[in-house]
Image (cartoon, rainbow, N blue to C red):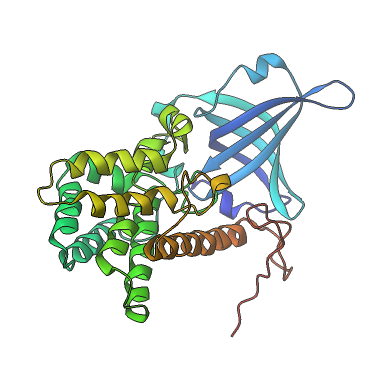
Length: 317
C-alpha cells in the first residue's frame, strides 16, 4: 500500500506511517506529567506532533535523525496540521527509502546547474569569470552545491534548494542591471552566484536539515567569504580591491547586524544583492507558508512566524 505523505494528511485522519524525526523535546504539563513535542518530517513537509503522558524512557528510545513508525490521529491546531501520537517506535534506517523523507527541489538540478554555467560563460570580466570557473571545476564543490538546502525550514528547505535559490537571485540580478546600467553587472552576478556558498559547509543534510558545528560557530557568510578567499588565491590577475568588493557582497547580504551580517551593505551592488536575496527568500517562504496551512476554506492563513502576520491566500486573477 502506498504511503500517505504529510501533505496528504487531513484533520480527522488516522495515521500509521514511518517518519523522520527532525526534533524532539521532553516537556511537562501543568499537572506534572511528561509529554513529547516532536517534529516529524517526510519529503512533503513537517508535522508538529504531541505524545501525551509520555515517559523519560520513551523520550530516550529514539533521537533526532532517527526513523520512527508512528500511530497517530491528525487534527488542526491554530490552522495547521498536528499529529497526536499514540504509539512511536524506532525503525532501522536500512528498512526505509531515504528519498521519501527529504524534500527535493521540484526543478531540474541539471537544468539549474546548466543555467549557472551559462551565466558564468556570459561574464565579461575575465578575472571574476576565472574565479567562478574555478568553483565549477571543483567536483566536491559542485556535488555540495547541487545537494545542500538554502534553509533549514523557512525558504528553499529542500535538497537542491541552494542551487534553486542561487539561480533565482542571479536571474534577478541580470534583469536588474538592464534597468540600472551603472551597476557593475559581473560583480553583482558573481555576488549572486557566490553569496550563500558557505551553506555547503554550514548545513548537514544527509538525514534532516540542521546546522553543522561550523555553521553554528562561524556562520555561512564568514564561511563563504573564506571559501572565496581560498579559491581567489589561485586566480592570476584578480586585484585585491575587486576581491574586497566581492567579499563585501557576501558578508553584507543579510543587510543588518541583527541578521548576521558583520558589515552593512555599503556599495550599490551590495545593496542590490541584499534586496534581491531577500525578495527571493521571502516569496519562497510565502509559498511554503501557504502549503503548510491546512484550512483550505479560509482566505487567510493563521499567524505565520516568518512574516509576523497572517497571509492572504487568494490569487489575483
